[in-house]
Length: 381
Ligand code: G3I
Image (tube, rainbow, N blue to C red):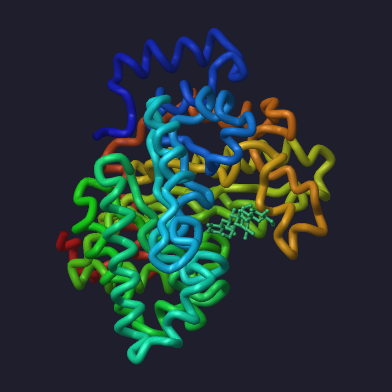
């Protein structure tokens, strides 16, 4: 499906509102629809039930399960499934015509694996076989339950080490199954939900060139093996002010592999702009840069903020960023009112440029050449 609306709609739907009304008169959701970009927020059943539902449905066309679809939540004890939170989120999205990003089937960090997993593996005569069975069973159960209702799955989250290009060797998946767990997970996800877009989601590659190279190497290996992967999520938890040109080049490099790409967990804490005279304005400009970078690359399909309002950001509980709380990294303030960043994003979405396909291809090839990767084989699936 083309990302951008037909020319007639561009002229009537985009030009007129952009000229006739300030950005604040248009919802973020409406502006996103006009641009063809999926713009979403991470949220969950608890937050929605506590009052965020109206804002989320009005302003976002997509939701990601911030926590409700993690294995630790879905299977709190071995063999005991709790679908209540995930079901509620999917039902909410469907009732409001929203896209759902499933997050995440296989994540080896934090509370991605359930707390009982290590003990269960330790008690098994063959921990590798046990984990393989559990992982494949989990993917089949979860992706199978929601088959046809999830637009895209973060199948594997953060397979690489936090700040280097190598695999995360502390992950139970890597320790017990080796690097092949990534391909196995994608194949299982495709079998369970053939219609979902299958993503590999990674942290920190936006600002770490060496890690980004490692990500490209991993992707090339998967594609060469014929692994059914459709896209890449660059999380977008920026540790420095985003550089629009660098980000655009990274998006183009992924696009040139034949994959789609999304910014899946965007947040920009105010501490990144603390030295500026107007940090909220600087934050708005940075948000505009990220959205502009995505809009400039046809394969960039969506941007999701990691949270809805500044009242619910994970950063305020994170050990490093906690000391800067309130981090205020999102598009809506603690009361749910639009911030300058939300206005800047709407303005960018309403002013969508229309790059031709030839220009996109040329930019992608240039990006790959810059990474010394023009000789790779074409995508096989
Ligand atoms: O649900 C319990 C609640 O019952 C309890 O009262 C409370 C006490 O602290 O904890 C609650 O669970 C917490 C949960 O967030 C919901 O707030 C967990 O302890 C906490 O670990 C969990 O943190 C989440 C973290 O992933 C680990 O799963 C964050 O909300 C979530 O934003 C964060 O998201 C990750 C992505 O999945 C992957 N990429 C990085 C991103 C940020 O770390």
